[in-house]
Image (cartoon, rainbow, N blue to C red; front, side):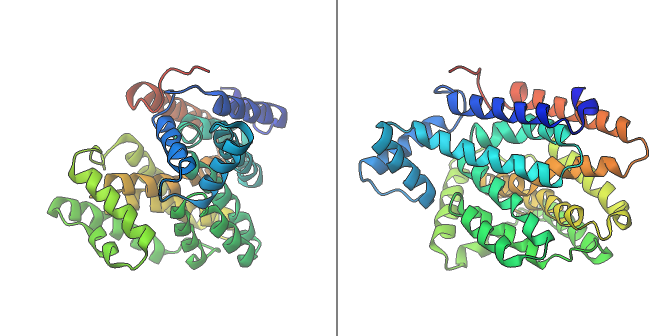
Length: 334
C-alpha cells in the first residue's frame, strides 16, 4: 500500500535497498537452495580441482580465501553488484521507483540475490546497460553486456536487443511473438524439442551446460516446466495488453525495448520447456524487465492509482506464492 503513495520517495527506496543488501549478505546457511552448492564450488576451486564456472566467481573465491580464509566475500561482492545495479536500473527507467522496489522484492530478490547470485549480478549489469542502447551508445551497451557475461555466461542472450526496432512495436513483431508461443505449445503437444539443434553449435560452454541440463532432466533431478503456471499466464496477459496498446508506446524507447525483452520470457519458457532448467533460467532472465515495465504501463492508464494498487496486490500474491507454495527460501536466519 505504501508503494501506491510514496511513488518516488527516494529515502524510502534507498532505505529498502540497504535493508535488502544487509539481509542478503548476512543470511545463514540453508536459507536458500544454492548456498551449499556455492560453498562446495568454493571448496573445489581453493583445492585446485577443475570446475567450469564464470571467471568472476573464481576471482571472488580466491580473493575471499586470501583475505578471510572463507567464502564470505563471495556473497558480499555478488550481492553488492546485483543490488547496486538493479537499484540504478530502477532509478533510470521506472516512473514509480518504490513500486518497482516492491516488484523486485516480491520475486527477483529471492530468486537472484538470495539464490542464483551469479545470474543476479549478471542480470543487474545487463539490464542497466540498456540505458546506453537508449542513448544510441551501442558500443558501451555491448561492453557492459559482455562484462555481465563474466558473471553468468547466459547474459550474451541480451545482445538480441541490438536487433530490435527501438521506435515502436510493429505488427510483424507482435505476430512473430504469438506465432512462437503457439508453435512452442504445439511442439510440447507433439513432444518435439527444438533445443536439439543447439547441441550442434560449436561452443563448448553452451554444449556443456546443455549436457548438464539434459542429464538433470532425463534423471528426474528437475521437475517439468509448468507452461500454464500463474506466472506464465500473468506474463501472457501483460504482453497482450502491451501489444494491444503498442501505438501508445511509439518513440518511448525504454518501454519499447524492455517490452520486447519481456515478451521473450513466456516464449522461451514454452520453446525450451523440454529442458526445464534452461527454460526457466532464460525465461527468468528476460522477465527482469518486469521490474519497470509494469510501473511504466501504469503511467499510460487513466486510473493510474488504481492500476498501481492492482500491481501491489498482484506482487503481494506472488510474494506469498514464492514463500509458501514454491518454497524459494526457507526460514530466514543469520
